[in-house]
Amino acid sequence: MSVIHFSLKPLVEHLSHEQFYELCMANQEIAMERTAAGDLIIMPPVGGESGEREAEFITDLGLWNRQTKLGKVFSSSTVFKLPKGGDRSPDVAWVQLERWNSLTPEQRQKFPPLCPDFVIELRSESDRLKPLQNKMQEYLASGPQLGWLINP
Image (spheres, rainbow, N blue to C red):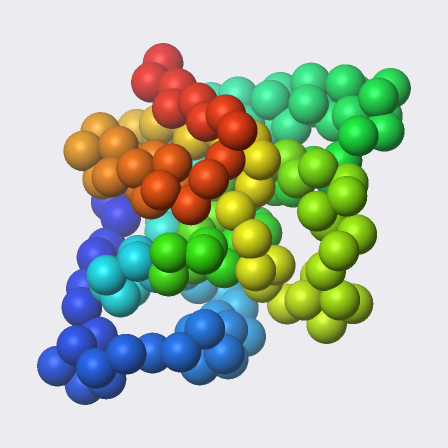
């Protein structure tokens, strides 16, 4: 199964972050993202090898973070409300503790309104390279300190 992109513009000119959050909560069995341009993306599940690679990166980053206590580590299930308009979920993300602690409890509970300081996107068999490169450009426009696009 491949990633499905579709535009909401024929129905809704601009879906707010809150409306997108409510759409995701009403359809929790579907992994969704939204580009800065407003296109909705339905994400398919990944296979065993991609899931194992993602878990290894999360484990490595998590172990480093436990030792340093410098931030918070997030899985691909976390959607971040990016400053430039997209709602994206990197495969692995890390946010500096000071930035995380500056969010309100409600902001932490919903889609955090910030770009992670470090993002990893891991290309799986179902991913085309160009959309992942575009996604990384969205992250870079939103201000991370580091981003990796890994194409095994």
